[in-house]
Figure 1 (cartoon, rainbow, N blue to C red):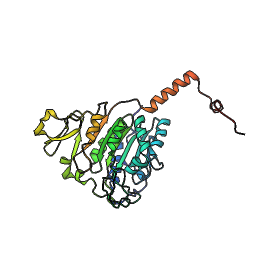
Figure 2 (cartoon, rainbow, N blue to C red):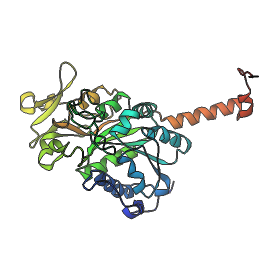
Figure 3 (cartoon, rainbow, N blue to C red):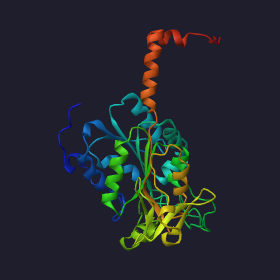
Figure 4 (cartoon, rainbow, N blue to C red):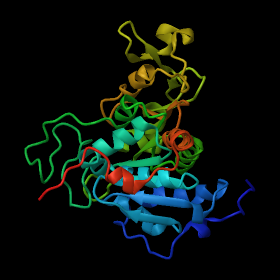
Length: 338
């Protein structure tokens, strides 16, 4: 296929004025996307953004591509149909933690399990923003909101852990305070053939302001963000004095490098087929107040669903012919109601 003509940010920017709250992290994600897409060999007319319902779900309005709202939580299901019917398109899915992990949780995990060729951006602000500040599936225990005035009681989801448990073939995490990191992560996710999920720590400055400040502010990143690099020992800290090991129980554990030696550190392997080590790494932080891994957790190959389904259909047509819908509808078992 010939290379697509070069594009600029303007080619990917719609004529709609973004209408998020001033200071919302969604602006940063949108800008990163519009600046990144011209670096890819793709065209706006071959790109689709499908969203659910919520603040993040306004994203398709602002992209000069094809796009649509689905209904609450159903973006992965709608996108699955499109990716199956039009495999030549680039299909992106956009939704928030409430949209994707509550009413949409079932659709999300099965899109990842099937390995549908989708690039899924999960905006995690740990709150319901559009409905004005109720706790979400990623809100921390004890979160006081309009729907939990005495504090929330249930343990939150870790979106990366959920994706790894569903065996998504590409799983990554980034945050809205680092445009360069977002762009690199989005590019990697887009290059992947199969289900790719990117969790984005995204600040809601109205209903959950500063939720990620302890790890994403510039003066905190060296000591609180664990940058995952394939093939490298997992180290972090201003002087890389901290590291991650696999302990006797098989869990990932943060240690001082001086106490264990560099040879004891876990070497990050994003291509490991077994997701258990990546899962252990995803469990290092209980919340955005402890050292937290970012980057690519998993990037493995597995047959992509639409491709294998098309192959199976071709075999069926070769063996049994094109089929007859009228005959199928009138085949057994059928019955007549008088």
